[in-house]
Image (tube, rainbow over all chains, first blue to last red; front, side, top):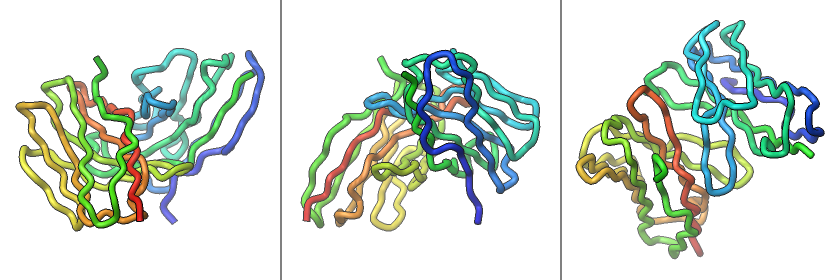
Length: 114
Length: 110
């Protein structure tokens, strides 16, 4: 089954404790992206990647890191999480950079930072 | 001003009516426009995209684009309770940046 898999689904952590949210897709997609979703603000792009070893900042990259060492994986790293990073996070992938093919989203990761 | 704006709703329509969802965008150079549907607790899924001025129909859904006025709308005919969800407008801005609006919550009442 074609899918984007995120883990974990739920995560509660404390300020300053490094964490990684994993994302993997099995569709051989070149484009992958991370979004956060907050009430009233919609989906805001954190980082995106056009291909292996190519990553770029989105609209809200501060406090986040990503890497794209393999085509299928695109982990999101929070080196020192803060409470304002409490949010619902989605990973997404697409067959091409022009968005002509739809974004496939993972099931989301709800992160709480206390 | 937000890049992509939507009324957060909720928009309430009776079953069988036409639901009209609107979205405005600020970047006049935007080229591609998408509507995603998101059920509560689920991830978004693409329902329509439109690139050219005018209407595009797909089943009960019609997307309308007016680049001169910088708005895009989604009409849902014969609304069903299963259409109750949040609808997200997304726009590709200059620089190939995909930006989402805040979403409109639609409630279809039986």
